[in-house]
Each structure stands twice: as structure tokens, then as C-alpha cells.
Image (cartoon, rainbow, N blue to C red; front, side):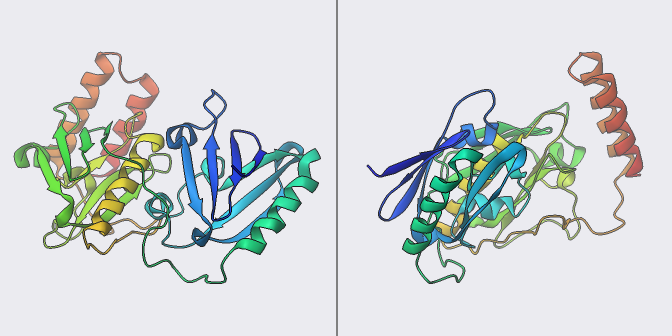
Amino acid sequence: MGDVLAGFHAAWEFRTDSVLIRFERGIRTPKLLQALGERRIPLEAITGVTLAPGRRGSMVLRAVPRPGADPLMEAAAGQLKETCDPYRLVLPADRAALAEQYANRLRSLLPVDEEPAERFLVAPPEAPLRFKAYDGKAAFDGKAVSFHWFWTGASTAKWKAGDQSFPVTGLSGVEWHSPEISKGHLRLLRRETAGPEGTAADQDPAAVVFGLGYGPVHESLPFAAAVLAAARATGGVPAMVPAGVSSVAAGARRDPADIAERIRHLGELHAAGLVTDEEFSSKKAELLAEL
């Protein structure tokens, strides 16, 4: 057991070769951190330490993750909100002096190498994992990813393709776009084959789309990180799409018939009370704008 520094939502235990982070389970703790539970961060997976004033008189101690070392951060690709950053420890301002001591101690233990890691050094979330997207259910058993389509959300293209199963041996990486930004999705990137260039996520059988409460960050991001780590372990080269860069060709238009079908499905959800008036109007306007 090492020294422990407790903050809001988490406690860091400092060991000789790593930092063990335990996240609290409580209504004030972000759901992603609760889902992660506990993470061991090897010192070689950290390139620096910062300490800066936070909000409402707090102090923020942050370990800077080494590029390529953590599958969760690689999958997130810079899209996480600050409050969901698992490398931040928020402390009361009156513990600033103690935090500075721990920050200096941690800095003195860090290796000199700041180059991107050649392999993942932080353990990924463990399979099996599953979550509900807007158009289907995604499951990962550690060896393969499967998509089971929902008739209320899946596009005609996905219905025609049928339910899908993708062994990780055939994957090169993942593309995760946060549902908290816009048009979130999880797309599997395959080594040998891929959909037509510019294929939208709602038309790609190798992708599930988020929205209306489906595919939340605390479920879909750990899933994406686990798949990414498994793909790299089998020899795939992780292919990540930077945050804010869409894989859909600029100016691409949807099939009007498919848009009409999606609106019909949305109307059924609205009639069943599963979608609010505001969500229905917003999503309908979004779909019509894609024509």
C-alpha cells in the first residue's frame, strides 16, 4: 500500500511503479468515472504532472497521459468533457500544499521518455460489454463485436444487411464520436474491407449511431476502448479519427426514402411516450436538414 491522496470523486494511491486511481460511486460522481471504477496507471504511461487552480476555490492535480498508452484516451480522441477526465483529481484549496508535495514526488519518479507508446500500457475495460445505441444493440465478448438492429431506429440499409458480427482479428481500430457533441456513433474500422467512401454511420452496417439517450459516454466509450485494445492485440494498427473530423464526405445527402422511414420510426417513439415533444421536433428537423 502506498500513500493516498483523496479528492472529490476519486482517491489516488501512489505506488513505486504506478498510480492506482479509485473512483467513488455516488450521484455527484460523473457516470463515466463510476463505470471505470478503478484504474492502475503505470508511471511509464504518464509524461507530466500539472497543478492548477480549479473552480470554486479548488485545486486540480492532473497526470498528463502519454500518447498511445491508454486505450480509453485514444478512443476518446480529445472529446471528453473536463469533468470526465480520469486523469484529473480535484482537491479542496486548503490541500494545495499537500497536492504540490505529491505532484513534485510524482514528477521525480516519471521516466524521461515522452515519445508515443508503442503499445497500450493501461489495461482496457474488461469484456463482456454491451450497450444500446439508437439503431441497435452492441455487444463485445472479447473476441467479436456484434450489432443487433432495432426496427424502430435502424436504416433500410442496415435492415437489408442484417445483424452483424465482426471478429476483432479483422479490425484495425474504432471511430468513436461522442453523443454529447453531435451525431455520435461508434464505427468499426476493418482491415481488408470497408464501406463506400463517405458512407454515413446510419447507413454503415459496421457502425451504430447514438442519440436520444442511447449510446451514453459511460457505456459506449469503455466499449470502444476495449474493442480498440483487442484489435491492437491481434496485430491491427489502431486507426483513430481526430475529434471534430467527420468520415462523411462534405455535402453528402441521405436517401429521401430512408429519411422518411427514420421520421416514421421517430414518430412511433414519440407516440409511445419514449421521446419528448422537444426531442421529436429537434430530431425531425435534424433529419430533414440532411435531405
